[in-house]
Length: 90
Image (cartoon, rainbow, N blue to C red; front, side, top):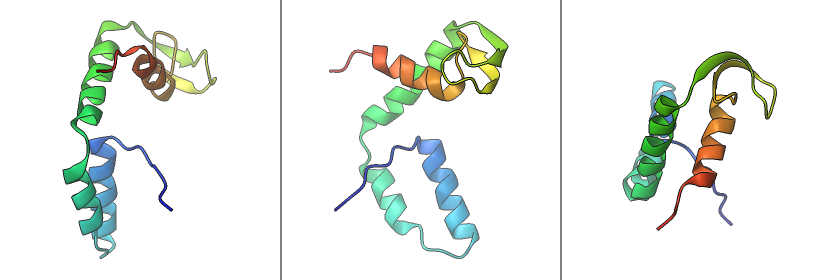
């Protein structure tokens, strides 16, 4: 039984670096990245574009309350979920 874990390409590459830094074998993850759907890259680009279009402030997220840099009054994680929910799928 498999488990689905969603990572950005950058997060997956960081995971690979951490595994290899600790003398581990990251080849299964490298294979998964090679098989990953192009859609995930498009999602990252979509979120980046939306962040650039949104006002940035500092404070607490209006959804989860975490402090930090906000995009349209939401933290990075909540903003990404929100924007992906508005993206039209093919």
